[in-house]
Length: 176
Image (cartoon, rainbow, N blue to C red; front, top):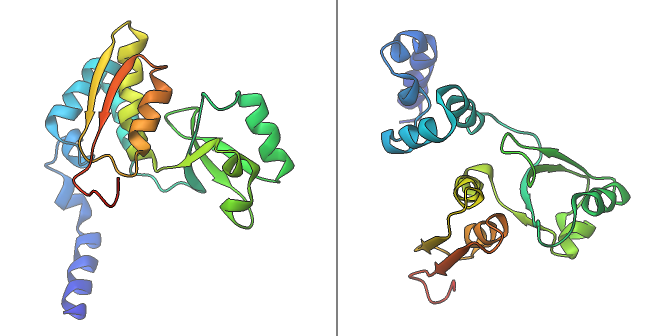
């Protein structure tokens, strides 16, 4: 079926203007209606579209999250500089970063000291949204039902500055 699939993909590329002409902005961004409406409510339509477009871009570097409670930004940057590594903020801003470096992640001081957590930007969006709610004074109860290995729960705890009660669980006993 390789030839059939490739032929259909080539035709889709040639016809992409026609294929996408009747779609709403939300549909073009492949975003569920309820999430789109919440983002528009929280950030306005222009900013919501900017956030969603960012998740469709290919970024350079490894997606990581700086553990805010682990070190200040200046210390973090000096450790990266010492290791000849570079961090670029994602569209979500600090602490959501893309790291560029030569060699192994395990060799980086920020990794060895537990100051970063490898996580793509789409996985960091949960904490990003919840941070705004706690900044407005809300205390949250969060249920993470597919929590293993715990990255989102760690990020939510870090971002909400302990203004969230998090219950993290997973169906796999081995993973937890």
